[in-house]
Amino acid sequence: MHPNILIDLGGGSAMTLLRKKMIGDMQLHHFSQSTQKSYEMSVFKLAKYYCISPDKISEDQLKDYILYLINERSLKWSSINTITAGLRFFYRKTLGREDLALSIPLRKNPSPLPEIFSPDELVSLFSCVRNVKQRVMLMTAYAGGLRISELIKLKVSDIDGKRMMIRIENGKGAKDRYTILSSRLLEELRSYWKIYRPGYWLFTNKKTKRHITKTVPRRAFDQAKGRAGIKKKVTFHSLRHSFATHMLEAGVDIRTIQVLMGHSSIGSTAVYLHIAKKNLGSAKSPLDLLYVPDQ
Image (cartoon, rainbow, N blue to C red; front, side, top):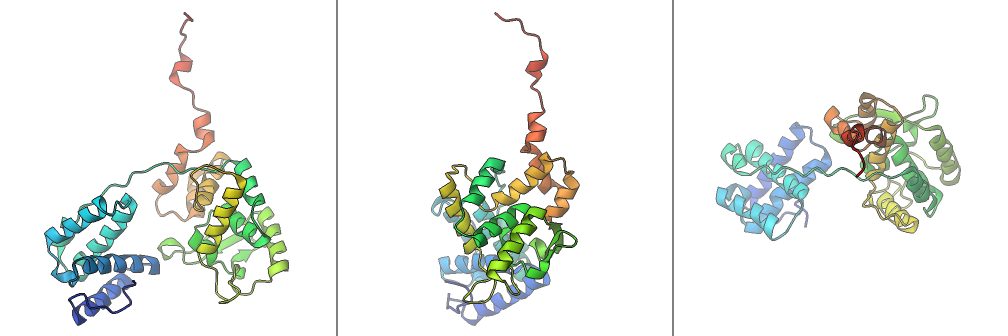
């Protein structure tokens, strides 16, 4: 159930007014549509859990709800952090209840290193797609280091064959940027265009004439991964991780990769230093520097 559906949770019109105020507050903070929906849903589900308006919920009830998410729902840390971020925003910005916002604990996310495709695995993945459109979708995501949300909203005009650049409009954080256009990808895109003749959107839904949804490339990826027999715990987003890692291994400086990836902080890009074979493979163990006689 979506919070856009007006439902009486004990707050009546007060709930509707709070929702409108929260949406206005999020718009003033320039939150993306996906963040707005996520935060709104966090508050909606809290209110639904207690069947009362969220401005009537106590500090103890807030803590009990978070414990319910941890112990009974067994949600991942990342999911809980998203929910609590929405709740903190609501109580701090919309209600002005700093006391309640501070009562919502911060949880530190574990930071596992992402899985990366080897070149051979990428060749197998691209070879196991069902058609040209799916192949070009996956190749574009890898070749430009794109997020899935950026891929599906590419326009034909975003492909700049003269400058060999791809324009990403309104990416994460509502930022525009350019990334590189590979000559091989340009060839693939031209072949794709001759077959599908896309209009405004590069990847179009035939029925709606709008851009495709995230489900389309995600499903194409999962099916190709299965047919390729790839057992690693990789997802569609691993194409982006692999782009950054392979660029680093090829000798591209980390600052350039940060710009191409659209990272606000160099720290987000620095994680690939921990993965790149160029950096790890060239390092020697201190044991190798010791002379230890054989027994």
